[in-house]
Length: 207
Image (cartoon, rainbow, N blue to C red):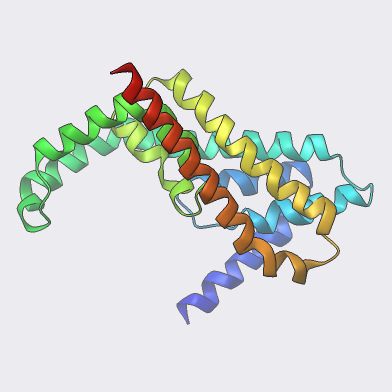
């Protein structure tokens, strides 16, 4: 019953987004990039298909998607920046021993994110599910806003371009996209692994 209501809400949101055009893409990607589990594929792939038919401009689709992704990421970032740490510290002090989390572990997490936040944000934006949540630890650790924005934009931009062009080239064949989204995800995860290996080797060489 709950899942049915959830999918009905998704369908309503998609109908509104389709009516609003570029503004709808911006709103949809803002929702997707914040804390609401909204499928970016359902926004960008159909928009890319419309671009292939000459009904939308592909550059404006990508721009609207990127700006929406940034705004949604800022929502999570600033929530964690201003409210999250106080709440987390309270919960850890009260219940941390039951879930094996201590203030020392939180401090280590902060140190890790301050040292490796840029690559973490960038690759996190390319991984499904994690992409919506990666802004929270950035806010918790008070990551520099400019660096957060830059690497969020890089990762979100790649994701937006991939989905838009999937719709542009294969939008008329939705079954083909469904069958091959797992392959696209695997390729992205493989690319993320390569990036992390290169990053590790470069840091090891520096040290």
